[in-house]
Structure formats: C-alpha cells, structure tokens
Length: 345
Ligand SMILES: *Cc1c(COP(=O)(O)O)cnc(C)c1O
Image 1 (cartoon, rainbow, N blue to C red):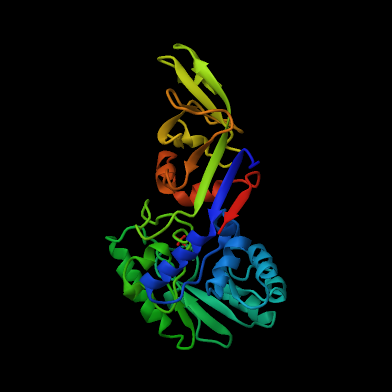
Image 2: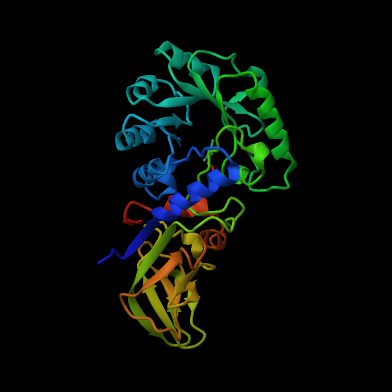
C-alpha cells in the first residue's frame, strides 16, 4: 500500500536528463544536489548520477556535504557552495569536502586550517556570493575550480547573461590550472560559449524548466500523487473547507485528497491549483489544509483509494508552480519528510 501522499522519482529519467544536458553543453555535468536534490533525495539521485559517470557534485551546506560523502564514499569531489564559514574548516576537511570560497576571510580560515582542494566563486554581477572581480585572490595552491553564477539564465534575451559570461571568461583566465564552471540549468541552453569546462545544472536534472517550462528534451522525473480519502456530494449553496473557501453553485462532487501544506502542497495552491484526476485536469477548491485538499471531481469516475496527480507527467511541475504563484524549484523543495520518496528505475 503506498502512503496517502507519495513522491515518485524516476531515476531513469534523471539519468536521461543528465546525458541530455551533457550532450547539449558538450562538457561534463557536475550535478547540483543541494537541498536533498531539490527534495527528491540526494542519496538516491547522486548514486544514480555517479553510475552515469558524474564525479563532481555541488551542495549548499556543510551538513549536506557530510551526508553525501557518507552516501557516495571517498571518490567523488563534493563542493560546498556556502564556502568555509567560521569554524567549519575542520568538518570540511574531515569529510573531504571542498569549500567554494567566497571571501578573503573564508580563504584565510581555510588556509589556517591547512587548506587543500577548494574552489572560489567570482561574483560577476549577481551580488549574492563570491569575490568581486577586482578583489579576487591571486591563484594559489589547492585551487581546483573557479565558478560564477548567472543571475538571469532563465531569460535568454537578457543582456546581462553575455556581460557575466565575458566577465567570467576574463576573470577565470587568471587561474590557468583551475576548472571553469559557469552555467546552471538555464545557462546550458544559452549556447556553447556558456559551457566552459563543466556545467552545474540542478532543476533540469530533476525535470523542471529554468524558464517556467522544461525544454522538450528534458524528461519528467518527479510525480506527486495523493490518495482520495473521501468523496462528498455537496448540494448547491453549501461551502467546502476552512473559511468557507468554496461555495458550490451546483451539486458538486468533492474529493478530499491526502495532500496538504504539511506535505508541501503550498497553501497558495488555493484557489488556482489543479490536479490531474481520472484523466482530466480538475480545480483544487477552497483552502488547502494541513493534511488535505479538496478537488471538484463532478462527473468523474473516481473512487476512494484512487490517486490524483499534483504534478508529474500529466500536470507539468512548472505549471503547478505557476498556479501556486511560485516556481517548480520551490514546489519540489517544499515536499516534506512525511511524503515517502519512491524510486523507480
Ligand atoms: C542552485 C545553484 C545551481 C543550480 O541551479 P539550477 O537553476 O537549478 O540549474 C548552480 N550553481 C549555483 C551556484 C547554485 O546556487
């Protein structure tokens, strides 16, 4: 019996997306597996990506890196995008992690602890993390990778993309021995001059699109389904859910489905969310509650115990995100620990 709400992860599709992104970029893919692989499960996803040939991974936090090291063993390189925060150097070194250093203080901290393999991030305009170009360090022993991050890769028409690329190319030339990593998912689709030596996609590996919809070559990886807990025949004039969020204007069949905000189904799905039920797209009505949401299934052949799809092959992740006023990245990383991840492939 599957759990009432489950997230199915198609590892074959993940592997196919990895190969597709390598083919499009023409350089190795270094997968970004931060935030538990965007909620899909970093251990299972990274293992499969390693089997496909990935040898370098990116996480955000030191703790994520430690868990990934335990899962993957000593071989792959694991970069920590937070860098070397105060007091973290011993943990990074103990787990064989490579910080992506963002500032002089981080470089000093890493060196004081004995240094070793690491990367640096150059800020080419995003003003999030990284050394400003004019303040970037001289090349140094142990520097294996230089990266920068695009601010607008989701918009191929944005002129800032080209400016960041050119600034990165010039800055990276100061580190002749270091691998150059620039493009995230969106960047992979901007053209070969964005690929440099390795790309760093996240969302496209997991089946999402950087531009609010995936490229046709990207396969669906994640499917969130919920079981129908109960069916109600609601007479016209009655209301459904908290705060009388929905009023039936005609006799309405309501399915109470086992997915609420404690599963990661954002409350902002109300009132524009939709689910795929018995072969049709149907609206979520009223307020999403903690453990359930209500779907108008009038006229559908649906029984208690059947499952509806919140996103997956029939309801695109990015469309579900748009309906909830957000993006696929947030929908995936919002799925809570209560929802079992079921791996196929
Ligand atoms: C999250 C992240 C990525 C991956 O971005 P996607 O848009 O998911 O492909 C790459 N690089 C850095 C520095 C990141 O923070």
